[in-house]
Length: 208
Image (tube, rainbow, N blue to C red; front, side, top):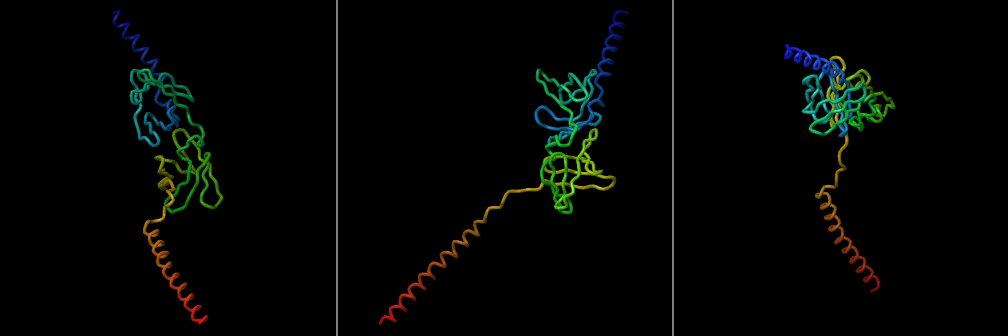
């Protein structure tokens, strides 16, 4: 009978803990204390630039790659793992998502610039706000399906759009071009010397 009571008490404690840590409470976009950002949707955790992982419940606790959630609130999650701690803060505004900042190009070659949570397309002067809605990044009806430092895949209904980070290093002059320029200079030098000698000979004949 005593064992039965202990089992009931244990079940009650687990149920209470599980009730306090529902997977749904983690839904949203978060900024981690080590500088990364991730989107969580019903246990599916996608780290921008780092891939995906699964959050599971173990004895009423939310666990991610060995990290156990020690506390969960609306705006913050604290994780622990073998004496280490990690903090997540909920991202409420797109301007906090620095991975979006920069210049991008999409399928038709048009450029767009993202800064402070707004996107400006080409030279049109049109600017559209980027918003955070639950676990999604939304731009003018388009939802970001995958996000990395070099590419963003957007979807709107049955349409899709791909952004690629624009940029690149300034190209240095090719060695061949330098050699050609040097060759032309070397060719010009003998011609200049020959012209100088012809002028001197012409002046000498005139004096004679």
